[in-house]
Image (cartoon, rainbow, N blue to C red; front, top):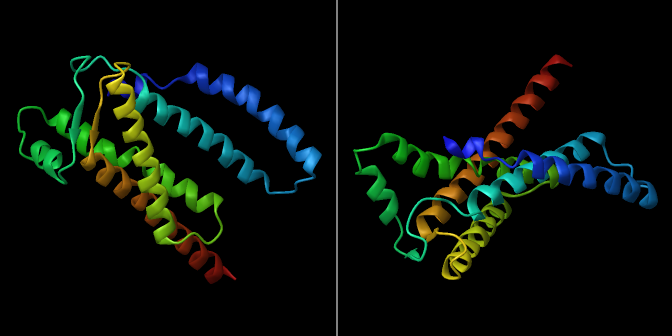
Length: 183
């Protein structure tokens, strides 16, 4: 769980101090009248993206520095972790963590984009994960970080995005149902 302690609070704070005044000036100049809650969602999205990129693209202390690992065989790494019984926290972090950390993308996409479809969220999830995996590969090849390109991460991360979308869809429908039943 050391990842939670590594969230770049100072970086997020600095970015938001710069972003908020610029956004306010932009909104005033363009005479935007969007709802205040969308602005709050954008602030949380920025903090989330910075944290995600920090956790996935910054150097880690694990693994040999000059080793580039690539897995293009679907479910190979997932099966490896499912059959690895020596360290349950390693299994949990690699399997559940890869899903959970991407759930917010599905929620943010649903909150910010009007009438987003399942396939649009699927594309957003796959594209964002592919970007991160590709950057990990490029940075690893250049010896900057020691991470791997793993198709199983694409699968797990995209599932996380879809779970976020499903959570939001169910929550929104329940809200509408209970709100309409009161009237």
